[in-house]
Image (tube, rainbow, N blue to C red; front, side, top):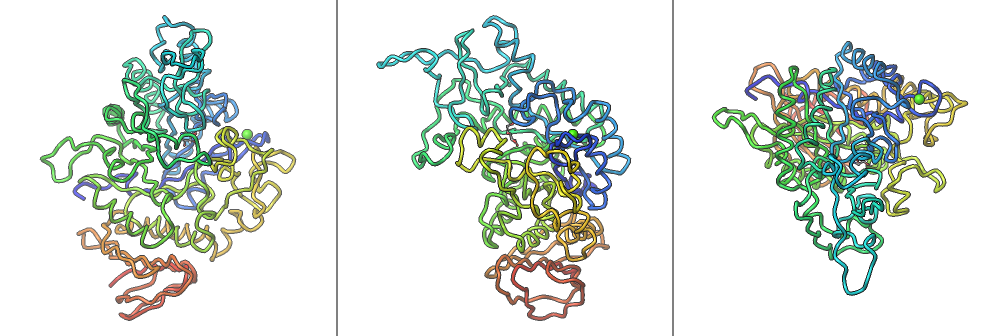
Length: 551
Ligand code: NOJ
Ligand code: CA
C-alpha cells in the first residue's frame, strides 16, 4: 500500500443494536447512556469503532429503521445531550463512532411524508414514489386493488399501498409504514445530505448506509421478471427477480455524491454500504478510480461495501476459500476488503456454525485481509434465543410467520454478568426480548476471567491483530484447501519489521495433517499456550484454528 492505512482499514468495527446493549432506566430497552457506560468493555475487548443501529425518533414499526426525524434522538434511547456525551466519551477512549443512516425510506409519520400524502399538489408529493393504479383489465377490480406493477415488499405482500384520500399508490420496499423516498428528486438528495452533515458536524466518524443498493428504482416502473423457482413456502419477495428494483445503475451516482460530500470532512469519515449482492456486482460499489495516473487509485464509491458472503455460504473450507479467492481477484485496485459474520438481520454466528466452529470463525474473521465487523454478543458465543409465537416483535415475522424471516432471535439482550437479566436491565424490569438461558456461563464477566473462553479468544486475537502490522495491513497469499482444512498466509509489507503468518483452520471434526514450516505458534483456538514449530507434518485437531508466526 502506497499510503499509510487509515483507521477503518486497520481497525475492527463492532455493531451495537441499541435496544439490546444496556438499559440504564429500567424500561427494558437499551439506551445511549447504556452504550456510554459500556465503552470500557469495548476498549478491553480491543475493537476500534462502534456502529450503532438507528436511535432516531421513530414510531418503531421496524425498530428504528422507520425514521421520523433524521436529526434527533428518540426519547426511548435518550437525548441529543446523551449522544454528545457518548461521542465525547468514545473519542476520549480512541473509539470511532459510526451511525446507521436510513436513506431509502422514512417513517410514514415523518413530516415529509405527512406533507407528501396530504394532496397530489403538495410540494413534497414528488419526494416519495406515488403511482396511479394500473388500467382496469377484463375482470373488473376497484382501483385500490390495481397495483401499478408486481414489485414486492421485503416484508411480505405488494410493495404498493393505496392511499384512499389522494387515490394513488405509494411504494414501500419494506413495511407500509416505511415509504420509499424518491432519490431522483434533487430536493430529497439535498435534505438527506443535510441530515448527514448534521451528524458529521457533531463529529461522527462515518455511516453505515441502510440498503444502499436499493435506493433507485426503474424510472418506468417496469414489472420484475418472475422467479420460476419460487414456491409459496418462500417469502413473497422471492417470487420475483429484483431486476428493476435493485442495483440500478443510477445508484452509483448517489453513492459518489455521498462520498464526495464526506470527503470534504477531515479525519477520514467512512462510508459503509449495506449491500447484499453477488461479489462481481458488490465490488462495483467501491466506485471507479478518480486518479488513474496514481499507483493506488483513489476510488469514488463506498469505502466498505459490506461483504456478507461468509454469512451466506456453507460453512466449509472449500466454500470459504472460494469466497476469499474470488473476492481478492475481483477487488479493484485501491479497494479495501471487509468481512462480516453476523448482524441484526441474520441468525447468530454460534447458531449457524455451532460452538466449536464459532472459535474457528473468530480466527478466520480476525486474520483475513480486510476490515472485520463483529456483531455484539458474538464475542460471547451468544446463540439465537427461542421466541414463542406470542413473544414475536419483529414485523417481518408477524407479516410472514414461519417463513424464516423473523429477526428477534439474534436481537436478544447482551449478557453482561451472572445475574437475573444478566445486568442488561434490573431483575425487576422486563427486557423487551427474552434473555438467553445460558447467561450464567456466557456472560462477559464470567468469560473475562476464563483464559479458555471465547471472549478471551476474541480479545487475544484482537490484541495480536493490533500488535502485528501484517495482520491488520499485510497481504493475503496462498489460500489453499486440504480436505476440511483452510490455510492461508498473511504476508508482511516491505518495511523490514513485520513477520509473515500462517493460518490453519480446520472446519471439520476430524484431525487433519498438514505441512507446517518453522515458526512460532501464537495462538490456537482449542489449547492454551504457544510454542515453537519445526518444519514438519503437523496435526490440526478437529475444530482447531492455529495462528503461526513464521521464520
Ligand atoms: C436493513 C436493516 O438492516 C434491517 O434491519 C431493516 O429492517 C431494513 N434494512 C429496512 O430498513
Ligand atoms: Ca432504557
